[in-house]
Length: 120
Image 1 (cartoon, rainbow, N blue to C red):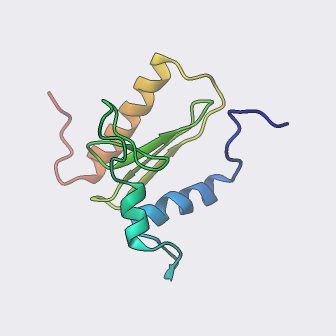
Image 2: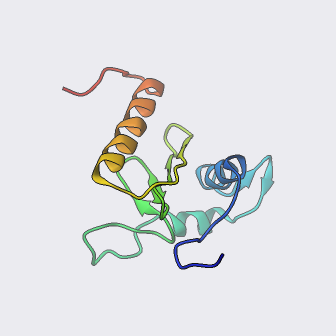
């Protein structure tokens, strides 16, 4: 059924490929699908006058960019590590879910980085 919060319906694999296309500056499986300049515009702060930083569909963060869905889904991209992470849920967002998603992202990033020690 149609509703305002139902923006995208996809498979996890296709959503990962979509996000990875941004990390790879528009390339997917060796094919140029987006111009790198378009990726740059989509992933840079377009609303400098606001406290939160947003590109076109992406929240700009210290680690790269992210996007949340209406039912708790969360994707993040870390171009420095060539990392894409997905948390796919069907639950209302809550402070506990937000903290759990952030902790999961931090744990994965730390495990893949050069210095895997947890922050003090």
